[in-house]
Length: 232
Image (cartoon, rainbow, N blue to C red; front, side, top):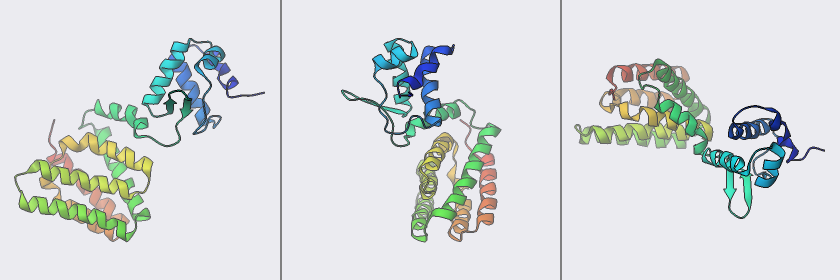
């Protein structure tokens, strides 16, 4: 009979770092849906015995999985598989992006691909009323540009907020989290003085739900960023 405890027995046959083996087994069981959100994991003692590793190894693996938002450690209750997507799940990705050069062609392609996908989701999912929030974000950017021409920091903050609203309007939490990470990576390189006009055109295309035009403007947006970005 298969129980949640015996699901971990195969780990004994593998040869890798013990902590890595435990983490990999949890991942496999989640993919196979043998573990599901909200499941209570066996105790440290049971896991230690069934896998053939020390309790310290189990504890270390659970700390790592908790840091990634995969499990929730509830003191006095036990360790559970998390019940909702957590921003921490994307931490390994964000650190990978951080150590990649900001002008890496692969990273630039990732940004453009993400933004085109975000635009498509907004056009598909956002209501006209929700799109007014994007319009408001642009108007704030425009007002900041007119009022404080020399205040690049505030203008850049408005630029970033415009893109965060775009992320929100996808109505897809996974995409929102991933796109916000991409925004965070590129934020230090933004020079919004050169982007006001293209943001206006992008906004108008999105409001008109003109997918082809919005995609073309996004290519233009990327081209402008390539030539005006701040090198850090």
